[in-house]
Length: 263
Image (cartoon, rainbow, N blue to C red; front, side, top):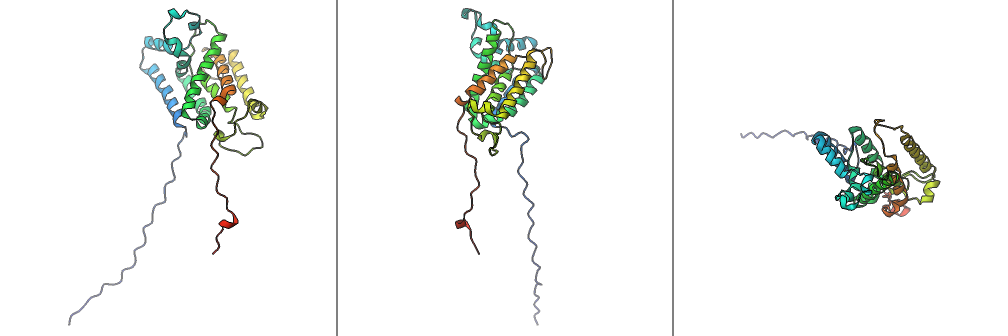
């Protein structure tokens, strides 16, 4: 007799439990690429200046790319081409680690909404023209002075002035991401309580700097408060030349009676 053995019924294997999906990583600094690159450029220039160049090379760098009002009282025949780029390149130089760190924080705070609103190319143009405006007022008020102006504070002040036209929450209006707010006219901005308070605090801070009471840094290091004002006025009055219509926020679709399904 042939014996046949039958395999016992196997219990079904339990389904594999999938590990829970990892939540997406949220960056510590959610900065637009143009702003991130700007910060990297400022940091790289200062790192080379502080760690690589000799004292003589640093003096050459500052005198070649820093801005001096004295250049504009010297005949053109006695000047080099530095006259044409220093009204912009001074904004890429810094005098100390405290100087560049302080400016970097303000640049992140006010540069991010402006970049998100106007885009990379317009941000670059805004940087250039706000730097020129800051240097121009400094030159007018310090005509013939042989001192050198360096630092991005004038540009940052321009970004602050631009932010006053759109970034602050309007009273009695729905909250939107700052760069999606409607642009205020100059008159509307001056009627906004939030904008006026910010401008007053900003003016008080620069008034303290003007009389020799710095808000941060070494009190022995002079600060070009007039360049700050030049940048702020430029950004506040002329931001509309760089602005573009903000993209409307993505709205969740509304459900109507026709969209309801019953089972």
